[in-house]
Image 1 (cartoon, rainbow, N blue to C red):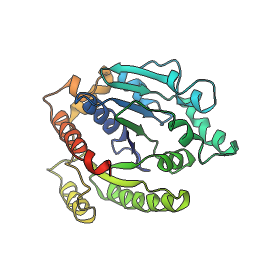
Image 2 (cartoon, helix red, strand yellow; image 1 turned 45 degrees about the vertical axis):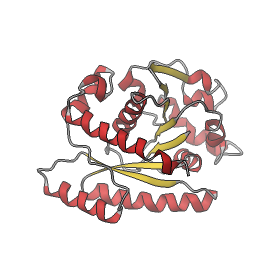
Image 3 (cartoon, rainbow, N blue to C red; image 1 turned 90 degrees about the vertical axis):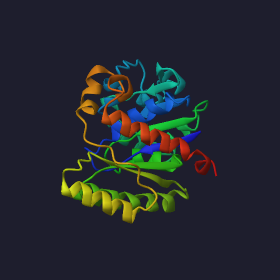
Length: 251
């Protein structure tokens, strides 16, 4: 099972959009996928109309088993939701004796999937540290602008620190330029910088597309909502890219 966290400590870079559409796209390619929401805003539940009875915080506190939190939303596509109750998770983890390992131990109980994809909140708190200590790969969506590129460089240093602290070997395996508009000079310059500094890690850019913003209101992935849109084409290419990475990810 590939364990991938979608993470950037900067907000507004398309993490949830990427997590949802990557998971949906993989499931449409006969990959069994579990998408886990670790953002207290609960946008995955809202964007896919999940309406789950149990969520990840219930599992963390022992109020529910991790398996009872899983909801099927489509063929090969399951979700574990979060709610605003997850805002209490940082405090709960700090009080726990094994605060750095609790979530890791919980997630280790999950099996039977080809992919576990985790949508992370925009922070560097203990919740995200737990995720980084568990996952094999980090995908970093980054807006194609100056501040987005700066946050990307900082994420590289965060990953190095986590590996040193936890004796782990998580790798940044994909940088995903988002909110790309070829009409804007800053987008083109930033994409050039990303490709130069993160050679071989950058995916195709995800272009600015209104359909990507509309799809959550309908409770659908971009593939169900507007499969001929540029958003569907861009995320479709990302899905193909991720599948092609499988032999290397297995090493």
